Structures are given as structure tokens and as C-alpha cells.
Image (tube, rainbow, N blue to C red):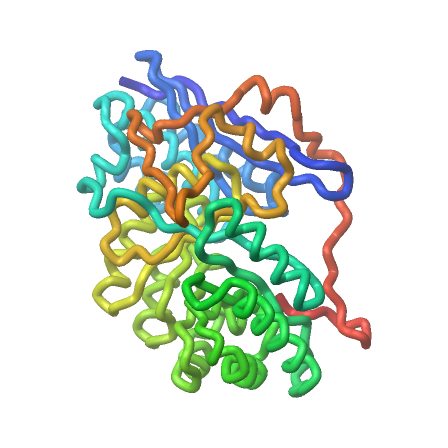
Length: 386
């Protein structure tokens, strides 16, 4: 079997000013078996498409079943290695290779990765709001949708100094959600890197009494030493990893004892095999995996295959809350409706799901369309780091 074509599909879903671009890879073979994947690097879609084309000559004519060999060709045969754009492109191609292999052998990808260690996958969804009551109301909506764990950002942008009023507002939002959902519902908090180390510790001490599953990106992830210092001073599990790619970045977090939960993303960390290896490395440090996923239902499906086989898996992010209705139509199969907080694991060959090509073609992406830049600012006009 040989790869004959690398096709790129892209859909622009949403409304003007609030749309989202989803990029997909479709590999075809000379035996009629094809595979799909999703390279994910939001805001860099044109660069990802360019990276896919740069990698194309390494893929066409190759054996799609030789996944590890092709990964080496794409990542180790050039001087310029790594980076989020290239890593996303490699991830998308790698997804499609696994889909082909599963279909060729007539088994789901989770079977190729050692078989399931669980029968269903626990998941969580986002809640949104402004004032405390609006977060509480949205939490109730997630419970009605079948989720039993929610995540949100109660913080605002901050400067280098402590602001007690900001801390009080953030705590009020967390308190309102906990009071609304009761003690049996999980709550995770995402700081989105908005805080500095001093603020991150102060905020953690405010919210710890409300029972927090994990504290995501309390600070930006570039300094493992700084994150480790925050972790030592608080009583909430620290999570990070959505902005990191490749096992070496996660190795540094683990060696510095900077993290309790890694949030590697199958769409940009290097693919499902790379995240599997990262998870195995993390298990040796008693660190769990909660994969990042703000992308399409295809990435959800791919993540579910990973979640099924990883012993130290914690919980899966599902980005349905607030998403445009068209997002769900990118796949032919509905897979993101939890029952009692759990999702079923796909059982068909490969990923067990199919893109809706007609729907994607009906929502074409225009790369020349201008998008309004997001510039979060402090009162003095300076940028809020995030």
C-alpha cells in the first residue's frame, strides 16, 4: 500500500467576527483506503497549510503503515525542527496514518495501542459568564447536557501587583458555582496564564476551600522552575501543557516537579503516539493526563482513542459549550453527548468516524478574509499576558 494524495480540507464555521476555522488532512492510498486527521494551531491556519505542503513530498509514495518511520522523516531529517506550526502539521498527518492502519487491519486505533483499560471516558465542559450568578446558571446548563465536571476562568487580567478586589471577585465566582452544583460535581479552574507567580499563589489560597480538581496554567508555562515554585506553595493540583509540544518540553515539567496534570493536545503536540509516550513518561512521575481539546469533534474522537488506553488518564476536555451549531456537523457521527459525565469510546475501524465532506465544502474558508486581532489590554494600554 502506498500514499497517493494528501488533500487539505478547511471549513469556516460561525458568524462574521465570531467564526472558527477547522483544518483537516485527508490521505488517500492506492488501495482505496483513506485516513483523516486534524492539525490544530488556532490563528496560524495558513502557516499550518503551508507546513503540510512542505511535508507532502515525504509522504507521497510512502507506506502509510510505517508510522514511526514517517514520523522520523517528518521531524528528524531537517535542520529546523519543532515549533507549534510544524508540530501541528505532523500531528494531522500522523492522525490520518493511524486511521488508515486501523481501517486496513479492521480494528479501532485503541486496539493498536495496546487495548482499552477502561470502558468509557470521563469528560468535562466549559462554563461562561460574568457575574457569579451567570457562571452558576451556565453550570446548570452543563449538568442538563450530561456533564458532571465543569471548568471556567474566574480571573481577569492582572498586573504585577496584588489586587485584593480582583481576588474577591474571582472567589465569588468560584463560590457561586460550587454552591450551585453541590459537592458531587467536579470544578476545574483555568487561569489561562493571566496571573504572575505571586498572584497565582494568592488566588489558589482563595479558591482551594471550594474543592478544585485542577488549577490550569496558573502562570505561563515557559519557566518550569517558576511553575514548580507555585506548585510547592499551593494545595491544588497544577495542570498545564496545551501550549507545549513534543516530549522534551514535558520532560522538563516532570523533572522540575512542576505539574500534577499534563494537558498535551493530540492535534499539536506531535500526534496521538507522541502524547501516548508523554503520558507514559508522566506516569513514572505519578502525573496524570487530561488532554487539551478546543478543536472539532474529530479531535474529540482521536482523543477518546488515547484516553481508552492510557492508565494515568484523568478526564477529557469537550469544547461543545458555546460552540456554533455547525461544529457538530463536521462529523457524520454524533459522539459528544455524555451520559452521567462519560462518553462512549468509538469502536469502528480506524477512528470509527467520518468527516462530512459535503458540509465542509458548503462552508469554505477564505484565507484572505481579515480577522480582528485579539489584544487583551490593561487599563494603561499594555498587553495582558495570556
